Length: 283
Image (cartoon, rainbow, N blue to C red; front, top):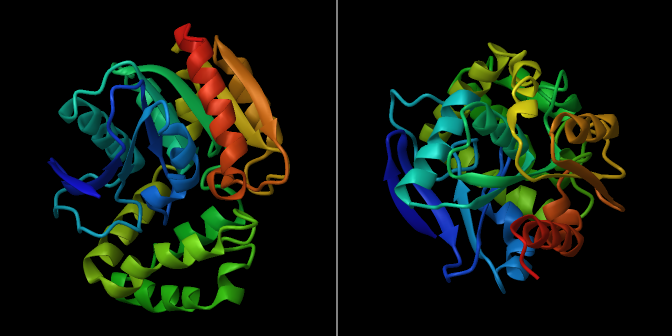
């Protein structure tokens, strides 16, 4: 993992390098860049894949005390990240909360983004999404210390597999979810950041309803990929997103929950590659 110092603090990121077209991939709450390991192993054959670990609760470096850890602030941090790495003509991909960030970046103009992929993500009034998101945001009312005590339960696989945790987010990714819990259980500064982020979400529950109003202005290629068996992100939201985006197109992935990068990495990579090629006019 590489590191870059941004206005909010130190951000880790993976960068496969090369001179291929750039794909930047964004993860969700309580996750890190490893969410994308499966698709990146495939896509990196002909693309430069850049994957930041954002301050969403599974990061390993505490953010600055004055950092804006609202989702709007983290979306601006992604834009700053693209600027600092001088990435252009970007295909920006977001899954889960990462897709919410993509929508917020569209609202800010998406200057360095040429096309977007929204993969089973927060949208409209499903924010925070499902039982998982609503339960997590409620825990943000706890003090950072008590939040850490609460999260210790996540050491147990049966707890991680509950619908209120990761059970309805991934069918096959339990090993990854166990790793994601380690920073928040071990590092007080990560607990502090997580609580700040969750409280900001609770204070702005209409965020994605407002963000949806920006989507018709994004007249660039857009792909919406939705898990056919999603129990957290309503399938009708995928259809609505594709309809709102002027160049939007919807595809579904079978045998997957929300976290398609874990459940169906090959299928997701295939759709992203085909979309990026068609959108750029490459063969």
